[in-house]
Image 1: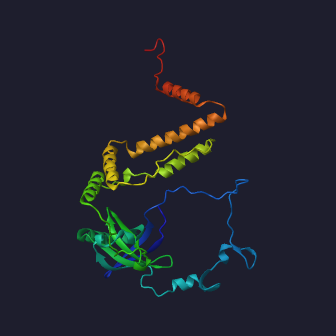
Image 2: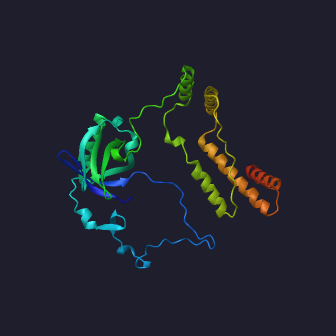
Image 3: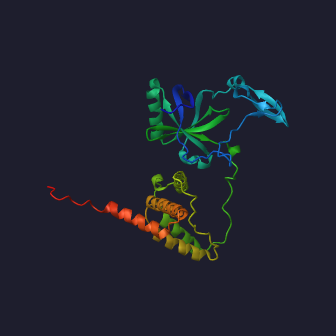
Length: 315
């Protein structure tokens, strides 16, 4: 069971629902450590005080806000706990809105809420009511040194909490108009046709992190003792001279793309190519030609496919 990052209550009118908050997503990115190039030892980052000229332990560190250059005011944990916030340990529901009214640009992190054992019925009532009305709840809660705006919605059997940005945290002008351009009717028709050709239902399972798969193959090859694998040559961007010609070519590519292999097959093909390159490079270091490696690989594959010979006298 994952560890809750917050616990409190949902305040819904006169109803209070005790809940715990959990992170709904996780990053699958591969991370690296900093090493000393000479000895390959992992680098340590020390908390160093330049005034005392020594390393500082974590329990010696306090929070400080810089109100002017090199001048700080200390804010303690007790100061933060005593802040007069109505949203402290409470998700205070203030409104219900249609989900379409919230632009995705405001979303800033997904979490899920689970009720305490004695609060399962009021939580179910809250979820069923929102599902029936097809609305999401808007509220606030204090988390990580900030009062945050949030929305609560039903997703299957889950109560999802989305952190929302405040308007002054949005950089782009959401009221700006479309860029002015002289577009012909034929260009618009062709662009619309291309969109229609590529239109489909969104299925997250159709998409994979190809960079992570290729990087994993590279790391595995290095762990196995192979040298750095050369990157396959990628298609270079071309300068668009004729917009209509580019649109026509895009439509043709979209038609041809429907007959291509699945992303999973393409990814397996990439990994096989990476491993093949690693084998050839390793063999080259030993003085073995690429043809010899290919011949040996094919012989091994053929032997695996060939059925075992039956012994004489077998029943």
